[in-house]
Length: 71
Image 1 (cartoon, rainbow, N blue to C red):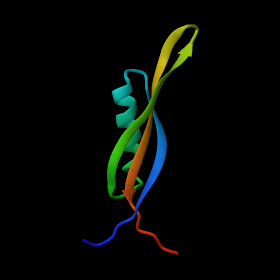
Image 2: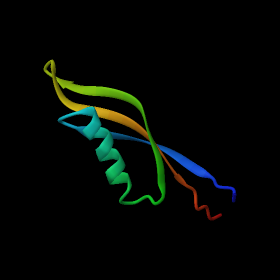
Image 3: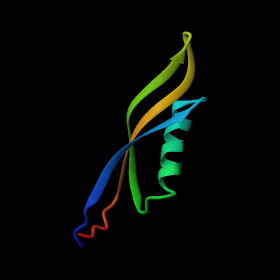
Image 4: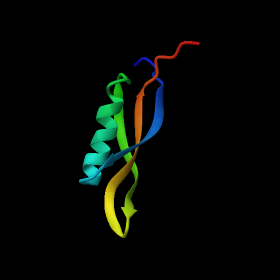
């Protein structure tokens, strides 16, 4: 099996509706500029509040993709 290297980045997705939608948004937007996405791991969930009410759900997502390094 050929050796591979993977890079891991961390993103924060947001949604006014749910944590699932927030995580999905992060992955879908990242997939527009990154190739070979492999794994998405939710590392943290939180909410943005205004005047005591939830206005946004936030999901911190770690994404890995195959590294195609140059020098």
